[in-house]
Amino acid sequence: MKIEVLRIGQRLVRDDRVTTHVALVARAFGASKIYMNEVNPEIKETLDKISKTWGGAFEVEFITNWKKIIQEKKREKIKIVHLTMYGQNINEADYTIEKENHILVVVGAEKVPREIYDLADYNVAVGNQPHSEISALAVLLDRVQKGSQFFTKYQNAQREIVPTKQGKNVIVKKTRD
Ligand SMILES: C[S@@+](CC[C@H](N)C(=O)[O-])C[C@H]1O[C@@H](n2cnc3c(N)ncnc32)[C@H](O)[C@@H]1O
Image (cartoon, rainbow, N blue to C red):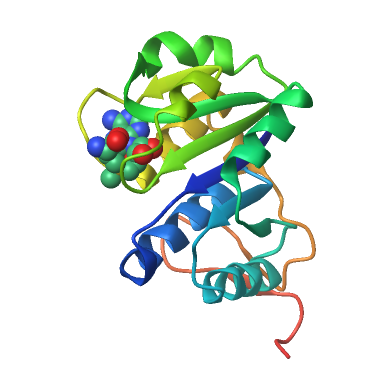
């Protein structure tokens, strides 16, 4: 399954850390790209550095018009999965979503525009209590890939972790420049 993420709106600088963590979760849980609006450009630099060190080809794209992205994806038959505490229980939706070939997961920062609920193919709640876009994204991506994302090899990594029960084992493939 190909996965992309769209994060809509943020509380400007105050939310930089959360936005960075949404992008880190997207990358580490198998998404190939994140679209973001109104963000500090340093977030892309942080993600690019992480990918340089730990591999993979995760993309960060800054956008100005979220609706255009959703409409383009819908034209390409990509399914829109909007994470919202008001949505359908994930326990009922995950079996269907995991069969999709390509999804765009939409997460908000604060109140999201009403239109998104209608544009989405799935409005999915990770429980019907308010929590966080970071946790909601992680749970959804894990459910729809059933943990398979954690076997992914990230290509062209400078460093690769060898999982160990105790201590740390890291293979350094190239020196940092
Ligand atoms: C801080 S919350 C905003 C909550 C806000 N009351 C709203 O309109 O949904 C930011 C984002 O986290 C995600 N989120 C929070 N709780 C969630 C839940 N229980 N299920 C799914 N997504 C959730 C949604 O994507 C939401 O836009």
